[in-house]
Length: 343
Image (cartoon, rainbow, N blue to C red; front, side, top):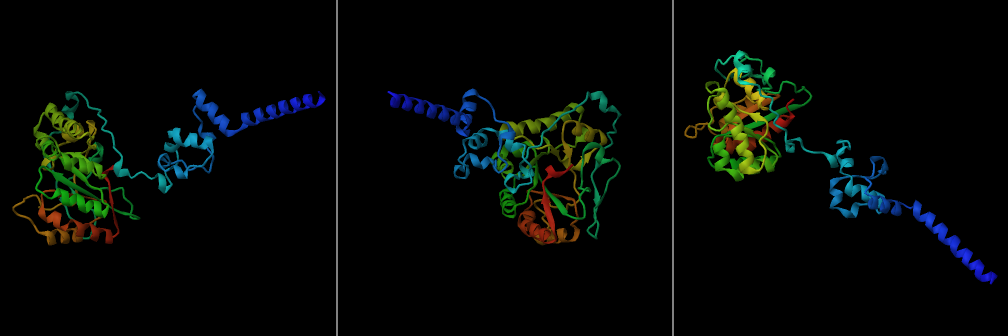
């Protein structure tokens, strides 16, 4: 009897020890948290745990600790709050969708702004300095740019933009070159262009380019009423979303380069940055093309830091010269930047 009683006491002691071991184990703690619906805090993450979105698919990289697995798969905030210094977590700024935030005032508010029609012009510098420009209006007051003058001399940056009123068969090749050279651009499109080229417009967004606003009908904005300007701008952006499923980026190129202080103010309050240019040439006449050599030589002669380049997608010369132009500018030390980097 004493022997049986001893065995019973021994088994009870083993059971108690097992229970306390389970209570302290990570597996049981994780199970209890899941059952109770308790979200793990960021402090529970092991410092050596590498939290990446790719871990959701690359399960072979996941450690076997149940608590760490739980955090990796369910704590999305832990990923978004981590420092972006790691290459694994770098998000290319060109793929970030900048919001269009409208702060539009009533019509009467804009009566005090001059509606004198101005036509954008610039003066080239032969020593690779910034172009001179029309300075009747302070562009920075209205979130407008013609070059990026905030770039330091430590890094040479250049911006590539295309105006797209219609398709002439070259945009696909332009996109091929940009993809091969890993260069971002902004394509300013009209509603007509989107309507007739939905697949190309979608491709622009899918490949990390910005798609900017070039209005519905390409009018001279200073000649339009308050209501007409709003319709031209918002109507194009709304159609972009409706036709492609993508939001338009908050950049606008004024048709024909014509503007006024009033139109700059309205466009700014509609949530768009007006984008002029500091490099351009006569490339839009499809029947009078300058030739690929002219385009290449023009860039070699007039490139400058912070330049915003205007090109037209309908130009055969641009299509033929683009890859050489990009490679030459890279050889000069330039990085091609996204308009999303403008501040």
